[in-house]
Length: 497
Length: 97
Ligand SMILES: [Zn+2]
Image (cartoon, rainbow over all chains, first blue to last red; front, side):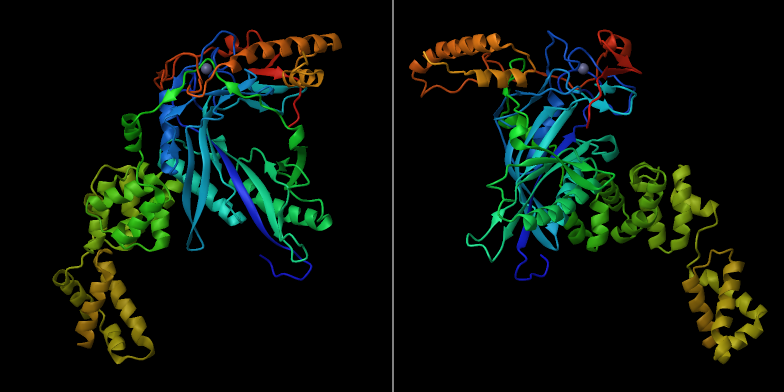
């Protein structure tokens, strides 16, 4: 990576990522409690998710289908037979003292995702994706005690485990962002980071090859960092760990090796921006997995799989490519439009309703997304439905309104049900581009301003200013409705001949 | 008969299950657990090479519920049995993150 001196080893980061995604179902995984963030503590709870004795969990069909949908989108093998297991550990936010998860028969495995990294395709393997239930939340800022809120306990949680295929912080970030985009495209999660819908656990190690070594190279001990809940924390953690592991290796190159030191867990300190040692693997929990007797296995047949497959939409990468080919959009704009499914859908519907692709794309970029962002909503919810955006695009394409006027018209359309054309007329924003209609106005202006006409015709210093003045007069007389380009052409023709 | 489960293993399992055992109990459970395993070992006499592994004793699968939110407990009812509560939370001894 960096320039090598003879005593400095070369290294390559090796990172795998576990991602936990909360699924956007209406109810929890194994009980009918509401799956919702932000309610008062312990109000979305029932005997099942509180871990009361004698209760029985029942699977949420939609959660299972959502999970399979992700497995399909990640090119995984979908298991025709899966079961549930209990993962035992003790923590206050886990009321049953075990978590229902999938251990040896996950619902999907052996997939991959292709990512754009430095204009190349980087393939990252997906080891497995399985379903489990989320734990509750511990609140630590209470006096003398820790508070436990079990609203989140039992929310369907998808764990996606990658192969250690990522070799730089950049690749980790591209992967993590692509996963967020994917689950949002699939409609299985809001993936709202502020609501903790997505959490990351990177496994970080370095492959070190030092020419001084006879065996050619080795790995540093793997470090697993738990529970990162922002992209920022993920990136900083990976960058920090790479740096830290190089230093550790340089301090003790003989012993800081995977074969001599066990895996360790570290935590991210968001204030100091460092990782902190927690424990070595041999001290780590033993989860004592065993089959969950309270739940029945799931068998999935071709018909059901086909039905779930039909719910997988065109995926972001394919859509990005198509937008560039089909609509002739440049990569950057196509990227923006396909960043969210809602934006891409909105754009395509406007084009299907008759908008030219480039006009619609630019309008969405410069106005729709800006306004949606200002109002904290998405572009499709601004009130300017795709069909109405198409009306506005058509007006602009026909030169009936100026590019500047589209801004005001778009904003007015958000508040009104009227057509783009009616709004433009009501606001006097229709533009006159018809030369015959503009001729008389121009003639009148020229007759009233002979000095400026002479200055313009004379050329030299004053010429340009005089032309600007004449055009300004035309705009004023037409109440701003003259198409300045057409009006300018008429002035030029009449004055210069 | 040699013990299949020694005292060390009993102590470890007890720790994982957060159960406190006296030394005599460790001894007792070591014997009992070993006996149970020996008993279950009889199954090894059967030839199961042509039998699919069982993952669940019931020959049923795919029992689902619809994804619909139903009734929940009130906060008062949820906390009714809690030895300690605080502002709608279950209160437990301070946990260090
Ligand atoms: Zn519940």
